[in-house]
Length: 138
Image (cartoon, rainbow, N blue to C red; front, side, top):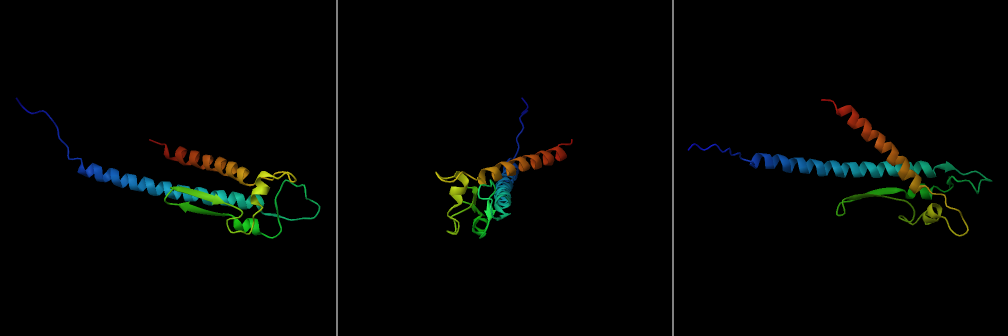
């Protein structure tokens, strides 16, 4: 009886899959970094309003010293595989960031982190849609 089986050396395919996995991991890391940079840009835009007298109850966060603006930063945590955007007491120069975001018993909240997240997420979703719509041709 004749052997009708087929055998394939998968070592080349395995190397290709390992390379694809490494490329995907790198793309994920770059995407996380891009996300954190985008979030920080949105946060900076949210707090970069010139201070003016007589607007104490304004919902905008006014910049007087620039400390909050300068405290906004991001970092990629390789061990955790995550990117983190931060504002406030990271550098110790703007310990009031949490009070602005969440409010206090004597001051209403003037959030800048949550709105920045939503603004960035909406724009990121649009960019992703555009990218896939442009590349979905057969």
